[in-house]
Image 1 (cartoon, rainbow, N blue to C red):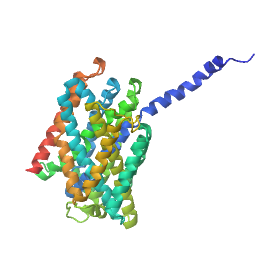
Image 2: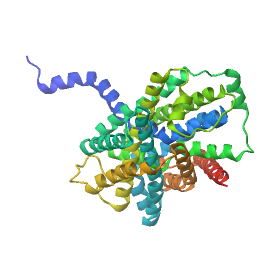
Image 3: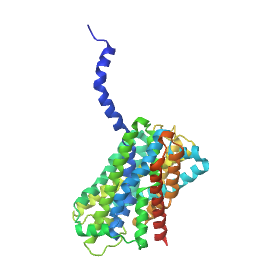
Image 4: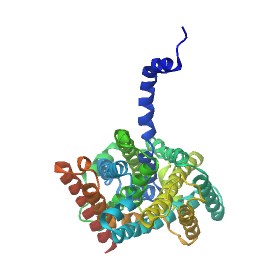
Length: 422
């Protein structure tokens, strides 16, 4: 007797179930990895290189300590996005009112403006390394970003961003070939110049290069736009943890290469241009290979960060003002969302022509991020206490641990930023 379709389906169900269980967690991966690859943007790379150039290995330990700190902060965005189903700006508006929502999105706009300009400065710098006129490189990068976002769904944009960000691994490859002296490395790890304002300024810059306002907005909104559910929570946390480790490995690699290259001269000096960074970061690889690897790493970092920052701004303003704000809507269905993304990208590209000093700009932008931390992290923790379902709220010992982490980050960021500016 022939089996009915229902019997056949029932017999196949046990075989399909493991595959389905495997596919669902994998589908939850993406927002954390994308935002962490964007975290190692042009400004972060420049800041790490400047840290190695000026202080050798003395800021390397900070890069490693920031791995768990970064995870603690971004895990809260995952928790809020999954268990409330709302983006960061929308949740602030519902929980604390429109005034605080607009204050938060104002801070986002300031941080995003600096970041976008920095990303396009990196694109222009890489183009000039290969003899491409600045206007051409900026126009091509702008057109590429607009096409990717205007024609893609969230999942397609996510895949493109990950592919671009993985070029940052070129810096790790360069670090493995750097002339690192173990004695100098150990000495740098054990000596911290606590009484030097310049050191604290770069401490603030490194903190601001790792914890950025637009990361908080982007990951919570991406989790929501991707429609992740409570069953995806564990996988999304792993996504965030692996991304946090990866981004700090890249940052540490850039710092190590810069410190190793400049330590050979016996007189570490500040970096002032992309060309100087190339000569400092890849002295042992030859001109062609060194320039190519550096260019790929910098370009990948700039492009993935430009996508993330632009989307964070478009999502943030949409969540606060109420206009449609999803990559699942076509441009005619959500005109303001795509218009704000486009304005951020095009505006950043146009302004790069008047920014002569990429290194100074990048470090200053990261310090600005550090100065915004009390506002950004304060609202994030308050949301995790007030807006989450009771069983998922921060409470007990972990709440106080998070408060301590946020407090220390905010104090170090503000103190370092003001010390360097004094």
